[in-house]
Structure formats: C-alpha cells, structure tokens
Length: 339
Ligand code: 8YV
Image (cartoon, rainbow, N blue to C red; front, side, top):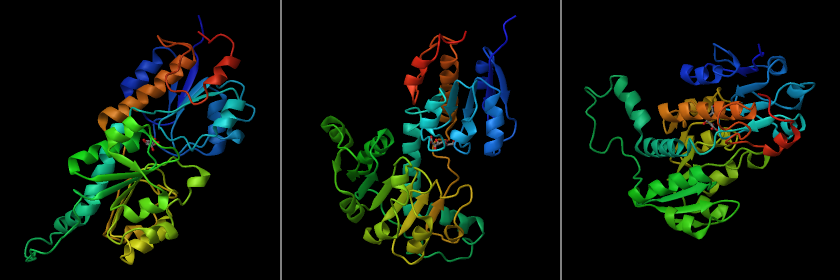
C-alpha cells in the first residue's frame, strides 16, 4: 500500500474543494479560522508535502528553516506579500497564487465602494436603521452626495484588476487616467479608454482615486499626508489593494477636516484592527477585506490553490504543470514528480 502524501490547509475551505484534494492526498484541514504563529506554521509545514495558506499566514525563511519535506505552498490570494518567495525558492518549495480568477469580482467591488462612498450609502443606512427617518422631516437638500457619472476616474496601479475597473467606467461616461510603472500597450489603453499620467497629475485630477497596487516596501504609504494634500477636496479615495499602501491615520485626519470628501476602504494597516479614527467618521465606507468574496470567485480561488498543489505533487491531468506558479524554476531542481 502506498502512503499518501500530506497536505495541510490552514483554514476551513469549501468542502467540495477539499474533497477534490482528498481524492489524491491525506488532507489535514484546520476546522477553525485563526491566525497561526511562526512557530505553529513551522511545525505544521515540517510535517507535510504541500500546504494551502492565506494572507494571515506569514511564511518566511525562519518558518522554512530545516524543512526538507515541503514541496508546494499555495496562497489563497493574488497578492502574496505574506510569502517570502525568495526563501521559498531557496528551500526548493514551489509557491503559487490565484491571479485572474478574481479580477472581475474585485473590479465590481471597487465600484461598489466608489458608489457607496460618493452617495453616502453606509451613513444613510445607519441613520435609517437607527429609526431616525420617521419623524425626521427629511429635507429636499439632505443626504446630498457626489455624482459618479461624468467625473474623472484615476487608477493607481494598472494591472488586470485596474483595467477591469477602467472598462466599467465607459458606462458611467467617465474620463479615465492611470499611473503605472509601465505604459499599457496602445490597444489596451484604447479598450480601457485610459490615459497614462504622472502620479502628481493623477492625484490632482482624479475625482475618484482607486488604488490597485501590489504591496511592496516601496509602496508603503504611497498615499500619505503629502499625497492627500494634492487631491481635490471633493475627491473620493478607494483602497481595495492592501493595507499599508495608505497611511490610515493621515487619511482619517484628511476626512475629518474636510480635506477629502469621502473614502471606501476594504483593506487596512494592521487589519483586522482598523484605525480607531476611521471608525468615528461617517464619510468613509469600511468593509472587512471582502473584495474577492463572491460565491463563484472565492470557490474559484480555492480550486486554483488545489490545482497548484495537486499538479506540483504530480497528480491529476496537469501533473507537473501547476497553473499559476510564482517560482516555476524551482521544479527543475526536483527529481521526477512524486506519484
Ligand atoms: C483574498 C486578496 O481574499 O487576492 C488577494 O490578494 O487580498 C483577497 O482576494 C485575501 O488574500 C484573503 O485570503
């Protein structure tokens, strides 16, 4: 009898997706959602051939130290700032993420935050639920928000998600400006109706500024007090990228002092803890990192993580060819995939 390879799943996942994994390997799935310490991760990863982890699991050189067994680590997310990919490569571990599958859902959600922040949906609902409408003599000029249509949309970071956000802007008759490390190919610019500008220009012109940057040390506080000061007082900021790209304390100050009209935030510095000053403000819409959380997309992300693990371990139709590896060259250093 051949001994099955072992795969650790760091959190509860869709049962039917885990069942697909369990057709081939011995699955050890955590039943409770909770963060894991470096020591716990080190111990868990030492005893398995593959693992599925997510943003709250930080896998660095110290976690991998002495690990001779782990072959594949699949991250449940397109962003992978929780992984030290160089350390994984050195340790001979294939890392993967979940690109593409979430582009459209995250773009939808960016629009949800833009619209909700501009039209004060959260504050209005809180007011209504608090029973304040009846008897309030709500005036014709109460609850005035900002129009979205016809305005200028600025996108900072124009990868696939940024492009999906831009394509939606045509329906709102918006002008689209973007800033990115490199210019998009002309046909893509045309399809997105988007014009490349410098970052200062983007900050000055945008009525809606959406952040879609990866989190890197250089992008920490890419939007801080100095950048906020360059934006229009009537502008709306949306962050669906990563906490830490915005200086949340500086943002709260700008929102409180009326130097920025509103914000929509799905990600936070130090999440799941949210800066207390943001919680006090009515002109910010807050959500708990759910931009990719549609039924189909979260299931799709989980399936891609499983596909990567199975393929890296030599199982299934794509054996030896993981669909979305981050460091594919690692596999050249392996002997024939275990089967
Ligand atoms: C994930 C995300 O849901 O893909 C990403 O980078 O931030 C989200 O889609 C998040 O990482 C939770 O796992």
